[in-house]
Image (cartoon, rainbow, N blue to C red; front, side, top):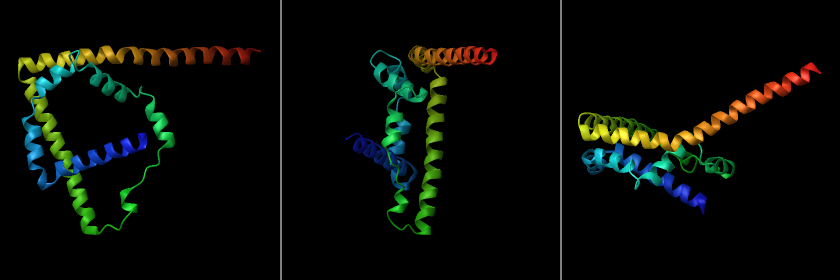
Length: 164
């Protein structure tokens, strides 16, 4: 069931990415351009946005634990191995991938520029940053402490073995 959900999510991501970079994705690009990023950032920094922000921060720092389990049982398949793809089709796919990256970069930079140019956007970004740090600090501090303990005690035990 998890594999199906992961495959469905990957297919949706691929479809949106392909649509974003294609000529047929004009309506999607216009919608994403008209998105109110300041309000979205403000809501992500609020209590209502906390679960989504926690999920994103955990995914970013690799503390969700599910990725290791998924990596063990997941077999990645390349879609090109299922069918023959012509050279022209490969060129179109590469062009769409480049255009998707370019469009995403332009949209994100435009939203960031828009947020930074207004006071409400600056406050929203500061609020989101503070909420993210509050969520990310405990797991990162725990990880650092565990590494420091392992390093310290590893040296202690290794040096004691050499002395004997």
